[in-house]
Length: 101
Image (tube, rainbow, N blue to C red; front, side):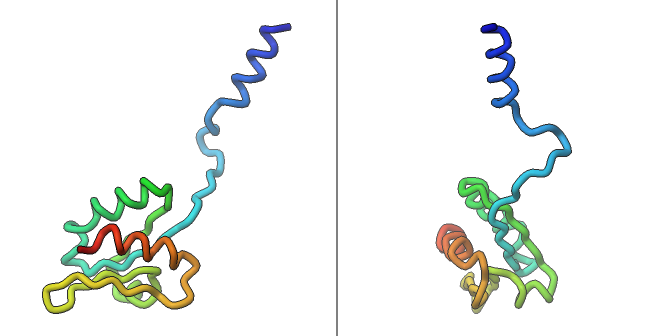
């Protein structure tokens, strides 16, 4: 009987099967000017991983207005702009505070 209980507990603790759907959690979309992408990617992914957020980093022009957070270079200073009405506004703000000087 105890062997069956151990098997039952092992099944409950097993990680999800390969190919099983996984909850992505919060997805934060960030626009980064193409010339800044290499410079900021490590910091962006580190913060997102620490908080278990999914991160979508885009460098295309359309993303500048669609992203939760846009990071641009303004006169030599990195500036973060939050999108009004973003579902991930709180996360985007935390990301900007952690990544921008």
